[in-house]
Amino acid sequence: MTGPLLEVDGLTVRLDVRGAKRAVLRDVALTVHAGEALGLVGESGSGKSMTARAIDRLLPRGAEVDGTVSFDGRDVNALAGADLRRYRNQIAMIFQDPRAHVNPVRRIGDYMTEALRTNLGVSGSEASRRASDALTQVGIDSPTRRLRQYPHELSGGMLQRVMIAAALLTEPRLLLADEPTTALDVTTQAEVMAILDDLRHEFGLAMVFITHDLELAAAICDRTAVMYAGQIVEIRESARLHDDPLHPYTAALAAARPDIEATADRLVAIPGRPLSAFEAPADECGFAPRCGYARDECRAGLPEITELDGGLSRCVRAHELRGELGAPANA
Amino acid sequence: MSAGPVSAGLTVTTPAAPRTRRLSGLRGTGVAGMVSAAVIALATVAAIFGPLLAPYNPNLPNLSLAWVGPGGGHLLGYDFQGRDVFSRLLAGAQSSMLGPLFVVVLSMAAGALLAVIAAWRRGAVDSVISSGLDILFAFPGILLAVLATAIFGAGLTAAAIALSIAYMPYVARVLRGVALRERSQPYVAALEVQGSSATAICLRHLIPNMTPLIVAQATIMFGWAMVDLAAISFLGLGVQPPQANWGVMISENQTGILQGYPLPALSAGVCIVAVVIAFNVLGERLFEQAAGR
Image (cartoon, rainbow over all chains, first blue to last red):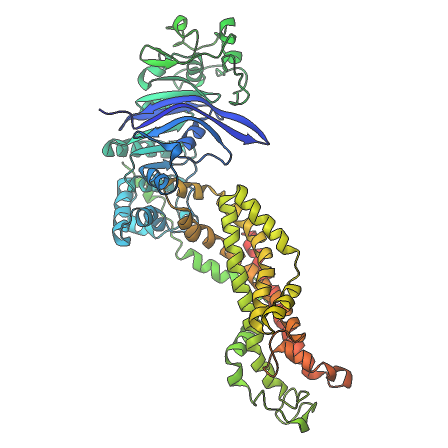
């Protein structure tokens, strides 16, 4: 196997907020191999979506980017014009709110076939045929009728499936899914996830799956990266993330999720509030103020991300805490 | 992928949604809007078929009939040279309507182009375009038109081009705001990620989605252009007599107002005012609809 399909290294992004440059991502590093699914988990404002936006070059104006994003060995940040468009043809993005991300006055068919027709030069009839096949693949019946409908005539779950079908039409190599099921109700969510997982395996597609749901990420991703305050605090095989986390934050996230089998008087919560990346101190662990395991050494310096037991953790006490973090962190 | 029962439950049929909306669009403008549309339709018919519909030769003078009032099949009487006023109104519709149309098309095209470029590129490009527009705002349309006719000679074309330039900043400013709003819609970002080119996104999505406001703006602008062009023709810098034109008719028959024969000048004035009001009312209604949507 050759190098990773997507490699992000030392990615730091600062945005212009009322004249001041504020960091939203700090030293983010991750790799995704062809056919692999990486989960990206974190609270609101932790930088999950910004990471995706940095990967597909959709950052807001005035963003200051340090570090590298390379796709298939090419530096993404150096791409411009036709090269950038060609790169974007190889990635596809699925958004949280499908309704906002389609032009409301164009038919489903126009939406689905546009990329094929204008970017890849596929003929109109061929594009429609492929679109209707793709709709069948995501479990939408009478596809030819759907192609003639407008977005407002479809339900949210249906529209998300249309988006998935459209994303796969251009045969991308990497799929960026930005909370694709958050706006859907639970049964639709399960269905959409199943479709996404099936198709991903069928096409051997690499995926970055962004969610705030640790369990959901663990269920369909090979590895999961946990983000906090613009940093990746842990990357680990999904299967072991829940029971054997390497970072206190991951453990706290897992503990904060209510368990369907246990009745609790009071749900476990992480004390304090999530920090934005720009609020996080530059010289100590960003999670220390909310962390039950914090000691003086945590405030002595910004922890490096270090390898441990096949995963990566950004906690200075990770070694000491092995075995302790699996249980609910209620210190 | 067991999606059968779910999708079956979601069957919604709303045939031809946009067509019904467009129809209700004109109907939704109310009685005033309908009347305005009728006036505009009438003026348009006159502009196209005017010379054919004119009962008499609009350019044949008969000085013995000068200032003679209505009667004998001459609905509005004769003008200062003894030409049939009604025939001249019909014949004059063409240049009176064509001039504003030219101004609207030209200023809308240039304005929309600048607006979309400014909104798409933002930053420095937007600043340069916006400051350029601010400078153009300083020149009143009529002044620019007088200047143009002084350089290129009197005539409708020079005046219309000058007016188009003077109107362009108004169009560009309104449309820039609309384009900026549309550009920040998530679906535009989705198209960018898809690898669509900026030109394709602008031409296929941005501009089509701006059309309701473009149409509304164009309608109001038509009224302004008509008044300004009539004023320029009145000053003798636009359409040249003996060619029939409503502005020219007011100018050449103005002495009649003082001499007790106001009908020739007034009838041309009424035509202008009626069409301008109609365009304004319709434009406002369309604006309300486009904004309220």
